[in-house]
Image (cartoon, rainbow, N blue to C red; front, top):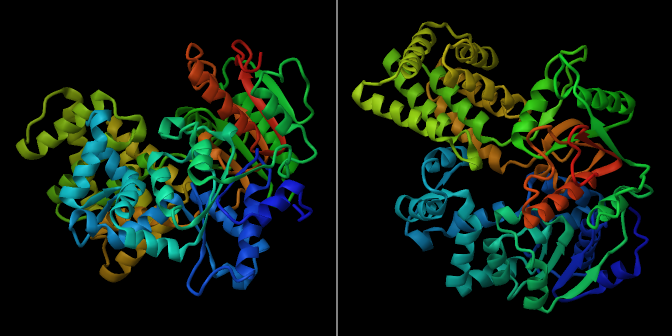
Length: 572
């Protein structure tokens, strides 16, 4: 995008107070706000030690913004620009000052996998209460409380608010329409003394289920009497295509009956004896072959649910139906693979057989309780985890399947103790994982299945380094469980790769803020539909916005695959 600005962007660059800048996908909101930050830094608007703070949601988005900043902002100015997630910024406040709230000198983070396991059998309405109790009574901090507690801190201390506002006199807020009540409360406090620039698009508001409010942008404009700019009609992502036109038409059903050059709707059928995903894979394979010569090409398969994402990923990972395996990345939730990694590490750690077995049972309980993540844990799994816990203290368990699970855990612990490890972290890890894969117990097979996704999540190198360091120092893997948990925690805050090269599979919500050369939006036949609850007008409105976000991630071409015998109502 060149700096041949529209009149609206020129006015934006000259603004001096609180600002609300709105625009659709690819409108250049991020680009022009970085230029504004650069211009103000060059003009000497910041005192020594002050920075412009740019906040966004996902680490991958932050990495992409940082990459763009390198291109737009000079090396000297970059030193006065901090790009971060809302989440990590709030943690930076709590890391230094949480003791002012709970009186504890040390706060221990409760990573999402551990949190999912801990909260599994709390009713939804009681989970917030338990998170607060954990913080105030045990000093264990749940990630969901970061913004809330930071806002609570600043509201109690004008001096602390003044310190942060002096450090960040200008704060740019990306994707502001998706902020929840806690994030909004934090920004309202900082905005009393810092200048705020909010960037948003009301038609990309797809996180209402997590607390985003349709009124957030208007609340910001009213609260701060902000100058408002609208980059309507500007599109620099997919310029020259009709992708954004389709996305906008979708909002009013104006797309129905029209033909588009760069958005294609493909009703797929069912081929007897082949995977339901066969036609998706053939089309994706054709796209990859067509783009393979281009430097850093990117293709994304975007789906409505995690279950469909895993099914598609599994099918891409196999050579079947006459189609080759397709190498890809998958943006799945971290809980199942992370908890599975802890189980394998607990087993790999070694020691006396009974010690290994007890660690294995403890880690297995957490995996069973927490692998559902935010979706919750089925009652049958909660009951199984409770039975395992009771067995650890009583040595008694009822039920043929549960007894088989106990026997299998004992067998794996014994085999692991008798196994001679090589010191190669990869080989030893795979050897233990295979013990779970070969088990007769479903709960243990799931450990091996979930652990396979560590490679796709790019967690492997962190674990390898940690385990290799332990072996190098001790000649065995004592402490492996703790090391893997620490590596997972560090990974949560590590900068994500901004590159979207190659083939990616993710839910539509995970694609927010990203862009790809070509996008395939894919819904299932009997579940994972684009319109989930047609009887609920509010749900339909949200699903329509979600589909618009999915299509407008494409730079050159988008294809929507819907079952031929049950075409999505959005497309008929």
